[in-house]
Amino acid sequence: MQNKHRMERCPLIRTSIRRSRFRALAVLAAALLLVAAFVPSAFAQSNTVPASGQPAPTAAPAPAAAPTATPSPPPAISSEPTAAPAPPAAEHSVATAELPQDLSPWGMFLHADTIVKAVMIGLAVASLITWTVWLAKILELRSARAEVRRGLRTLANCATFAQAHEQLRSGTSPIAQLMQAAASEIRQSASLRGDGLKERIAWQLERIEMAAGRKISRGTGILATIGSTAPFVGLFGTVWGIMDSFIGISRAHTTNLAVVAPGIAEALLATALGLVAAIPAVMIYNVLARSTAHYRALVGDASAQVMKLVSRDLERARLPKPEVMPLAAE
Image (cartoon, rainbow, N blue to C red; front, side, top):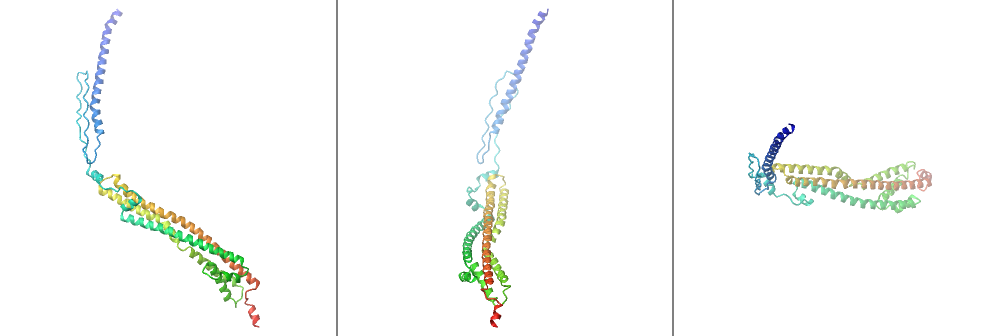
């Protein structure tokens, strides 16, 4: 009996298995049909790229649906080619607008705004002044230091103030001025007591040292001015240029980078010129300040040598003393 029941149930099981397979195949065929209907249309629309001034390409027609064994296939979705939207008028105008092609420093200067050009010219003039002052002061300091060193060697080789005055009294150098001031004070103090002679000579020599330092440092103040103001002047040109670029964007009614990039590059060139003018000015100012301090130290050494000779002469009584003159008159 059990074998008989099994034999009767086997055809039923086979029939149900076949029906489930047929249903699975029908569902799979329907899914393939839907995919074949949607994917070609979406792919064609994604590959459609509008170009300015050219008609948009049409999407490729969808392939025909594969025949399926389903009794009632779903209706295929129509995939008619759709035309791409026309580009805006602003984009067309930007594409056909004449944009600057020369992005070299000279080309950016020529295409820059008037105020930005004025800033660039001012910074270029400031840079030229910086290097001119550097060249002039380097030559002046070299010559002045060499002259003071020669005078120091002469003072070191002289035993008396009279000998040094005979060799160094002519000329307009600081050493000559020191000798002339000391000799003049000695002559004017011939009828006075000699106690305050060295103090009076020291005061005059100190004033000559300060005058020599002011003279040699003349013209270096402009370097400090350029070094402190040139970056801000360049920044002003940059701000103005960027503002002008954004105004151009507003007028063109577009956010295309090709419209704003040249103006921003021209504006940044002003900042670059500001740094080019400021950095050498600060460095040259520091170099000249150290050279000037060295020169002042040399002049101070010369002043000390003059005071040493005067003191020796006073100690040796080779200069006319005020107390000797009344005795001679008696």
